[in-house]
Length: 108
Image (cartoon, rainbow, N blue to C red; front, side, top):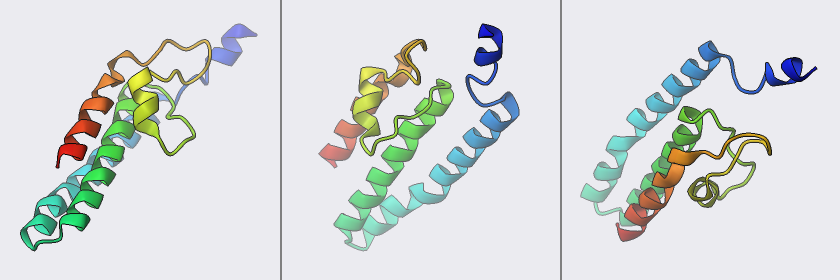
């Protein structure tokens, strides 16, 4: 029974790789707009786009760690605590970068 429960613990490898590729594509498509909005003087728009990118990168961190993202809007706080995807799961140790991303966006 334990083996049956642990089999679908996370996405299969093919789906996991596809989700990573989609996330990178989303980041690549939007990263140029931060600078473009800043060039035309739209500071608020630039900040909003940068915050969206930070959110996407935090989601990428959860994907790379094979952890499910928490069902909340505040992923950066959960990532900085190493939010486990389930009680028996190991903590997502390398997601500490979320606080760094958050501080970079705040400084902008």
